[in-house]
Image (cartoon, rainbow, N blue to C red; front, side):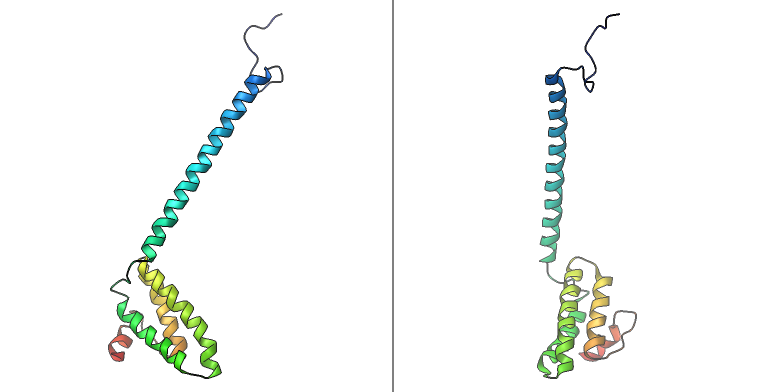
Length: 137
């Protein structure tokens, strides 16, 4: 019995040129998807970076002022305990500012709260130290 037509592409009976053509098409499609994914990721990171350079959210300005003053007191203190706390306080202050610029005020509040608790030993309220801000000015 004789077969009519061409053998399927994936079979070993298919001509090598047809198998190569289907593989190169799949490779081009995969490469195209990878390029699109890279461009999309780059655009996403570029957008996040431009938002990180934005000014601090007005809701965070009083908190930032109080936390900055607490870090400044650590810088002025020459004790070993202050030197150990300074690195963590600066890290948390920078992260709080970044989170605030990105609109994540709740996360920023946690870092501002940690800066003040670690530097000044101040207990903060749940309203993100509204009482501390009012008393510190």
